[in-house]
Image (cartoon, rainbow over all chains, first blue to last red):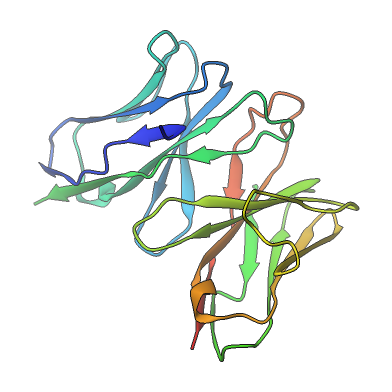
Length: 112
Length: 119
């Protein structure tokens, strides 16, 4: 079983739609969680950190469920510019140098 | 803030050539930098953790004699792919954190990446 798993998609949604992605992780002691977005042939860019109480940044909402070991990302009012691959990142606590473990990413296509 | 610069962005060279990639933190000091590799349609895979002033820590399956890492200062780490072959063609990306403490809760910031093509 992979340490971090995501549905690869693609998720094809119309503009204005709400879309949600989940990401599951296997290490129950994982400490830090992030969502990054990666555009085609570009480097990952931080979208948001994920906090235990959940957090929101504009149209984006991130949630953490430790009991079920997953994190989620909700995008409201999707824009064409939201089309990208969304990478889930988990930092296992056993790693002394806080290594990132990436999911394979979920592709989102927002259609006009 | 937290800008990471990577150079070059694109390299095309013949098999057997050694290629050096630089990663710089422009506006912060990075005790630790990370080197990743990404093949098409796959996720980023950590290759090694680069520590300033000490030897890099390599992930399982990554040849340290093939991928030489030097972290000579708090703002510069280099990755040298020695005697590169076509199977080394990939997207190489570095990252650094401008903090982290013991809990590792500071996000990493990524360089622009280097697309390496070995003919």
